[in-house]
Image (cartoon, rainbow, N blue to C red; front, side, top):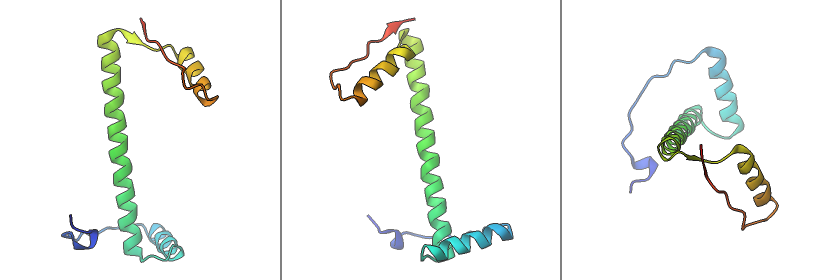
Length: 100
């Protein structure tokens, strides 16, 4: 696998409002980074967050579809009780799904 510095790079132009550019430059300087490195890192982080969000939404939609198809779900009160028990250290706490 290639290191980030060895991967093929493409060039793009990014137009920023002047106030955002100044803020990014100051933030980069305070982190000991170049403005370019700061912006690449920011885009990388935003991309990772977008991918995580997309994955989360897909999992939620799949779980919803499964609940609808199976006619099984967990009552919110039971989930809350289960979470309180787990937080308190009860590793034997279990949830039981119910028909709805």
